[in-house]
Image 1 (tube, helix red, strand yellow):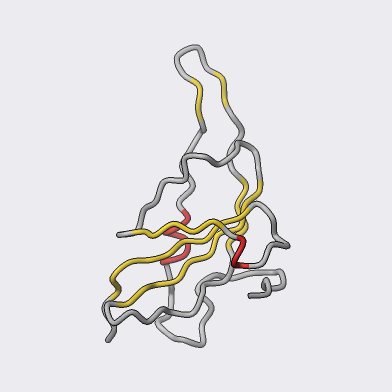
Image 2 (tube, helix red, strand yellow):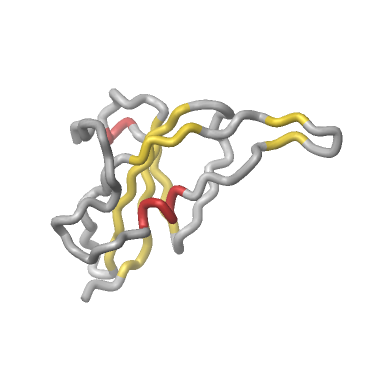
Length: 111
């Protein structure tokens, strides 16, 4: 069994961008903060695991996410909830290389 050292999360707001144009963030653990995302906007996320021997897992299928709308309250201003991208990407019912990490109803992007 391979030991995961960390993950690399890729994200973009342009679904037509090639993977080399996506932003990427190394992630230790299962949570990551994306501080500069726009409110009420669409993004695509994908991830890969980096193993201790330097190899990487296949890239996950893209997860299409819309950020929450900005909410105004007397006490505070902010998003209504957090986007749990890594939980969505990491949660798998089956441990198989032939099973997609994420279900999807759209065509994959070109790498």
